[in-house]
Each structure stands twice: as C-alpha cells, then as structure tokens.
Length: 318
Ligand code: TXA
Ligand code: MG
Image (cartoon, rainbow, N blue to C red; front, side, top):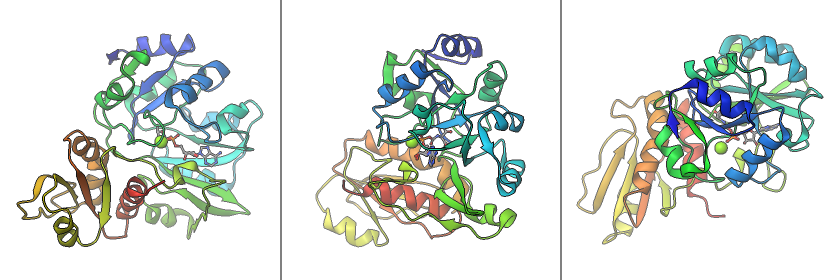
C-alpha cells in the first residue's frame, strides 16, 4: 500500500513489519533495528547476502551513544555539520546492536536522514530503523514510491510516500581507522564538502572478497538493459548502429538518427541536479525495451565523482 499516513507506517513497524521510507537520498526498506525478526525480513525481501551490513537510522544525535560506543572527535564534527543529511558514519558498535545488522562486524553504520516525514516517524518510535535502499540486491535504487512498488508490489505492507527524493543518490559513507577518516562509499555529500571540515580523507582500497562497504561491490545499481559507459559517445553510438539505443547524457543532447531516447541529467550542467535525476533516468531508460543504454562519463569532480562511481558499477560485468 502506498500511503502518506505516518500512523500506518508506525503500526506496521511496531508489529515487526517492513515499511519503505522516504529519505533525501533514496527510499529505504525499513524495519525495527532492535528486532531480529524484522531485520531478517529485510535481508529476505531484498535478497541481500548476509555479509552486507545495514545502516541504522536515528532521530537525533543524542541517540548516537545508544548505537555506538566510541565517537571520535572527527565523527562528532561531521555529525554536527551534516546531520540530518546524506552522510553515514561507521563507528564502533554498541552491544545493543545485533550482529545481524552489522553482519558480524564490530562497527555499525549510522545516520540521521533529512526527510520531514521520516523524521516525524522516527520521533514517534522508541527504536531506530535499520534500512538499506529499497531495491532488490544489485538493482537500481528507488527514488520514488512508485519505483519501490514496481520492485516489491504487495510483498511490502506499507510504502510511505514522501515524493521524489531530493538528492537522489545514497549517502556518503565515512569510517575511521587510526584517527584517520576513510571514504567507504561515494555518495550525495561531495568529498570536497567533507574535506572542508576535517581535512584530507583517504580512499578505502577494497577487494571483492571482503568488501568493507559492499556498496563498493563491482556490479551494483544495474539496469536490466545492457549498459555501457564512455567518454566518446559518437564512436559507441556508431558501433551499435541499427540497434535501439538509449542515451544517458550529462548536459548536451546528441544529434543522431540512431538514438531512440535521450535522458539529460542537467541541461545547466549542475552536478546536484544531475545526481537527483540519475536513478530516475536509469529506471526510465530501463523500461523502454532498448537494446542498449550508453551513458556518458561526467567530469571527475564534486558529485560527478559519485555519478561516475554509480555508472561504473552499473556497467560492470560480474
Ligand atoms: O542513503 C543511504 O545511505 C540509503 C538510505 C535508505 O539511508 N541507504 C543505503 O543502504 O544506501 P544500503 O544498504 O543500500 O547501503 C549501505 C551501505 C552498504 O554498502 C554497506 O556495506 C555499508 O553501507 N555498511 C553498512 N554497515 C557497514 C559497516 N559496519 N562498515 C562498513 N560499511 C557498512
Ligand atoms: Mg543499496
């Protein structure tokens, strides 16, 4: 059921059911973070491997001491600046946090989402919400209630409709190792903004066997349609001559008779606007029954980095 009624969402969550919640980044598939049954349901419905931990969503920073047992000064600074907002902090977990949520890790990922409906809902609950993005594992994240419904239909009791997500890409994830901040996942908060507050950040190097943040797994955020990423649109369009081609373009439309449809992320060339349109454009292109989607790489700065990261994962094999 798609609804704007917080009461329905609250009742479902108290009864151990799952609810899709709007956030400023993407829709989350939420359950009571303190309930093993609810958290297990999240993994099952999403078909998510158990080694991929969840983010815990809290209503205010006061609550942090019930989730994490150590909060480094750098983390406090970032929380102060960016919460509520699209920043997830990975901290040493409190014993109250069950291993199922953290996939057995000694750390927990936590954030305060910046969406009025979801903040109101959290205020009315006496437990935090564990919520991954509300899509089946590996597919494109949902940025509208309709995207969520398209994925789960009536398997999901309640979808709380908070409109289209303002930012449109997942939160940026930062962890702390040896007093150094480390980027685990590019996201809606540009690294440049974080570095203004705490100085240079290290990038996490990962491998696919033991991903630190499995959002970093190679193939992820992927349309069903075969998708390519390129700096050279003209050559790739020529290569697929005669096929039904869809384009995902940063700002300037391409003149070509071979192209069935073009999605322009931001005709003004604005990264924030481009990020907010990315998943919606990917969902749209994926429904057009195309032979191929060709995406254009963005300049590698600000949220261009985040968009390129998602496009790279969407176009990887395996
Ligand atoms: O914007 C967002 O972050 C959205 C909204 C719903 O809040 N949520 C989201 O969740 O993107 P999900 O599950 O799709 O991605 C969570 C990421 C995963 O890549 C996971 O591996 C990482 O967070 N993560 C969770 N706990 C972690 C931990 N203890 N250490 C490192 N990474 C962790
Ligand atoms: Mg996800």
